[in-house]
Image 1 (cartoon, rainbow, N blue to C red):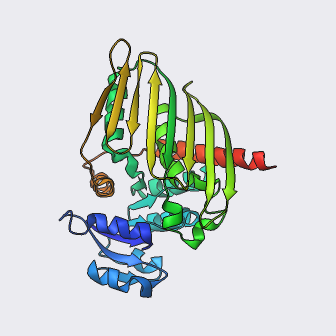
Image 2 (image 1 turned 180 degrees about the vertical axis):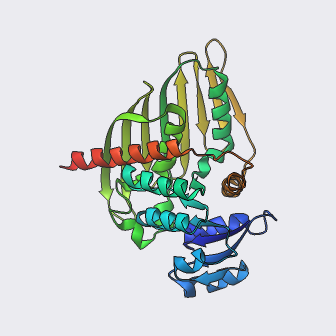
Image 3 (image 1 turned 135 degrees about the vertical axis):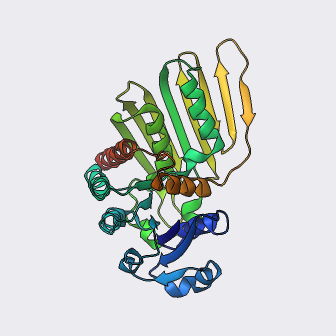
Length: 318
């Protein structure tokens, strides 16, 4: 399948690099960027046609599907444009900045009978794959509580001016690392019923020192917490608790199972290229060979929870 991409910054280039030469059945052929001179060499090396307007990509008959790696506030209008052009679209998170817009984007794709995929590559980490299998097996019994923490230094290392704008990145690190945690919580515990959140900021962009924390009650009756920091070294932890035990996913490749009456069991797994896997999954879903790895219901529930967190943070400021 021949892909086009809108946005060829830090993350867009990582997406292209994950595919070119890695899968003989998938290739990026056309890219849209507002800074073509900055990426001329990169485009040449990766055999990309360059345009400055998304309309050029949408009208390209060779492009079979489109990947969006653009500022958050542009996602919905770009998804709708892809739907009108009849091209399946893979959008980096967040899908939208509010639930109403998320539903509008999904409705446009459903009406056009094209697939909408979402960038949630952490689902493909071995630890998260095995965490899902452990939960589905029922070994921890009834699900009671889930804790999630993801922190990294990406904001300071890969600073882009648009990421400083409050309308693009409300609630500090929520749109970055925080959304990966939120996606995990939603995928295991379901839609959120209540949320209370806060941001504590000690230093502004471009080298922020801030934290986001949120406490949840899910509609399923499960409780949960989320935390993310934009200035500390990489850390990932999703810990799910049941009445018979718990399962903890650590980093990318480790899983710890704690069950009643037996010592904890820690297992390590080989690393994988999650960007390659998620794009392969998207193409497979477009072709009808695979089930989409994020359902539309999960997309809506995650944006709804995201919006509630932002609202809770804003109320705390007032």
